[in-house]
Structures are given as C-alpha cells and as structure tokens.
Image (cartoon, rainbow, N blue to C red; front, side):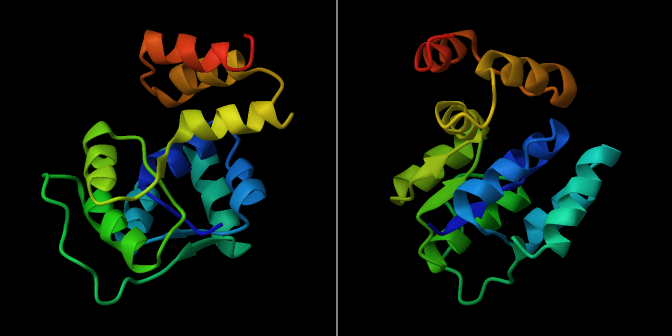
Length: 161
C-alpha cells in the first residue's frame, strides 16, 4: 500500500512514541520536502530522534515531487499544499492528513484520507496498542492534539472502550 503523509500524523505519532505503527502498516511512507522541512522544525527532542531514525532506516522517505498537478483550491499550509498533489502524482493508496481543510481538499479530488486517530484505531484492532483511550490521552497531553469528544466516543465505541 503506497502512503503519502503530511506533517501531523508523522509528528504526533513520533511524539507519543508510536511512529513505528506507520512502518508496520505501510512498509514505507513518502513525504514531500515541505513536510520534511516542517518535521525538522519540531521542538520535541524524542520525536525528532524517532523521525531521524525512520529517515535513516529509509522507511520514511523524502521524495521530491516532479510534474505536480495544480495546488488544491483551498488556502493550506506548505506541507498540505505539497502533499496533496504529490499523493496524486505517485498514485498513493492513502494520504495521511489530520487537518480538516486539507482532508476536505484531498477528498474533493478523490484521494483516500486517513489520520492519526484512524491509524491508532487500526493499531488497536490489530493488537498493536493495548488501549485506544490511553493513546488518545497521550495525544492530548503529550502532543497537544485536539480530539473532538463526539469523534472520540465514536472511535472508542469501535473497539469497545
């Protein structure tokens, strides 16, 4: 399965020590240079080290897009603006992205989208994390990740938590 990621799923999973979930699920994850640049600006030392390890192991791959289609019609940040057309160009099976506007733009052009919560749900269903509730708590407290309470209830209900 070919995956392209924006900054948020990689950075947030790295912060909570779960970046390896992407490797286990996808084998390799492609990121465009703008995403790599945003990731390099992280202030969380542990996350930076985990991302550096993933890059050194060559399963997190910075790839320079070539011949990109036009940027999405919505105003987005640099990573999203590059990741969406890049995912189209490489015919990604999934675009990993958490930001609402970016997800909307990607879906408008037919890209399948997943985010950090979906990745954690998948990991929980496959026995790779013991508690989805615990991982969501860590996202909130360690990464400052916002999770809507209705979405949290729905996701937790999917695994009986």
